[in-house]
Image (tube, rainbow, N blue to C red):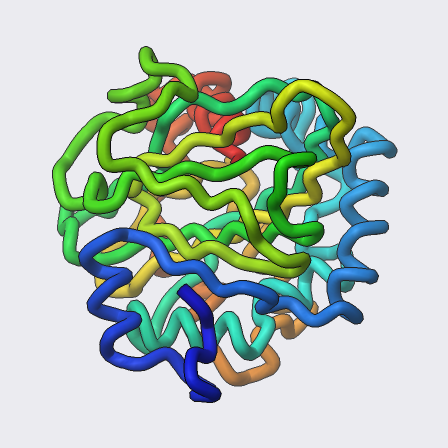
Length: 281
């Protein structure tokens, strides 16, 4: 499925219907080369300088480590990616004009990294309203092919309530009805309903290449969503300070759309953080 079929410059009602029914939409080549060339070195820095590990530690043991010294959205190209105009227009067409940024992940998955078992990444809202959507935007800077592995999704699985790890016992095995996404050009994006089950499968044995991956999620407004990072207020405040929304998306970094962090309510910090970070595909 392409972003601009037949030369159109916007998603149409058929795209929205398919997204709501299947739970995913593929946008080949959404990110321009100039943005990709700036993002990849930032991902390298995030991984190689230990910033990713430090951000994970800030979630798994916040009392010991405190907030991380740098946020992903403070990296200039990452901040730009969050409000990339074609992405914002696609989200507005699919879930409505008012949505809020939830979190951002960035990673370089080197050859030999194992796959990620079947899971979904949806967080609850305080209305327990499944009609309000949370969407994960999976950006593959170098695309997908046989050297980096593939993404498999289970269309329609977002339509029935299930625990995040309901299919984890299947590992990365094939499931009936799955769709495999294994051929994407550089800069492609996959939009997922966050409740859709999906899995990351590694490249087949043999020479491979790193899988550059950035994952940002957004939530439809209308309820308060549960955050996954204990420093979520700092994250939203910094986005506002940097004016990442550029005055065009007033709800995008508003705190009023979130509940308190789950760790403050008796859910283990480590469990919440581990689920979130290992969900990266």
